[in-house]
Image 1 (cartoon, rainbow, N blue to C red):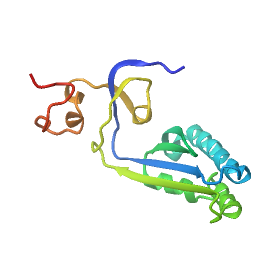
Image 2: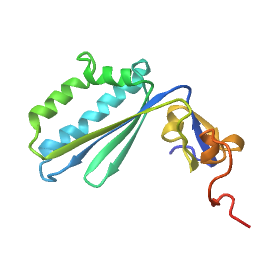
Image 3: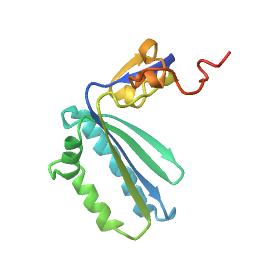
Length: 171
């Protein structure tokens, strides 16, 4: 079981980074022969990337949702993510080709991804009573106190929030 860090924490990242969210959706539950290979393909890719940090993946967090699975990945750069996706020497291109041959556009399995390029300092996050998670597992895990106490402060913004928060209710 992961260690729980009591209190409020945030993440600190040096420089820009990329958040890549990738997932699959089971459109035909009984088409196990179509969706199971897709679901199984991500594990070996992620294990390889985590064993070879020089490829750029900093952390990956899996999620299961009704009819699908997703993986939130934190990459050092878009170029490294793109290289992984396209380089035939790495272990993504072949599973992608297998998917297109086996499933293609038959509708049995849906796939999706979203890519966010994040500028240095243009993010904020907070984790309360959580293990190291998400961006805090990819970067540095730090107490959310002082200059990091509120979302506004974590974003480097000055002034007070437009409305009272649960942290500082009006008197």
